[in-house]
Image 1: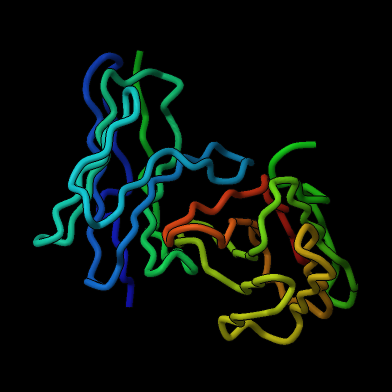
Image 2: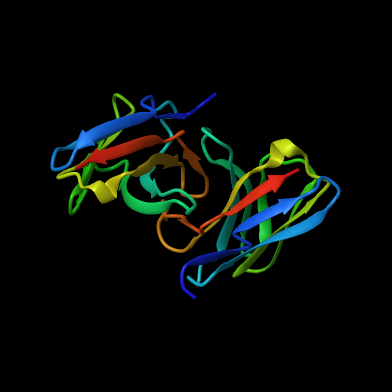
Length: 111
Length: 115
């Protein structure tokens, strides 16, 4: 039973436009959510996070939105750049100890 | 060295071999993790160590044997693996001090191929 789902395996976006990556979760006890970015042959790199007491967190070009009632979070990247092309994983935790990951979304930013 | 390092980066082994994966974190963290990433699957948590003590074993077969001699080092000893164990093995660490929700930081992974 997958508690964290990324239903879009891939996304293609033109350079300069907005990229929106989505993630759904089923466990209402999750209280912390993260996005990681992964390049081939490298480990995941932390990108941005949000706690359940917030509904938005922004860091430069990256904004994460959390909709607790819908159990949905999204990552917005604007403007998208070719270097953003990677696999993006969302993850969720309860009390911080264990992360549950989604399967990932491949983002391709075309120049 | 900074962050989380893993060696070797690539490993090819036969089913009868014994090998070990090493992870070292230079972040002063006190929790360390082993994950397995198979193709097109989510990262699967294998083991969790807090202050050198194993706090979670996610039903991992005994042919994988973790060791955590101190808070900075984590090993994964491998023996009599199967071809389906071929995957990317990732180590991560985090601090357990402060509020919940601390971020895990990952190493680059070891790409393991079992022949």
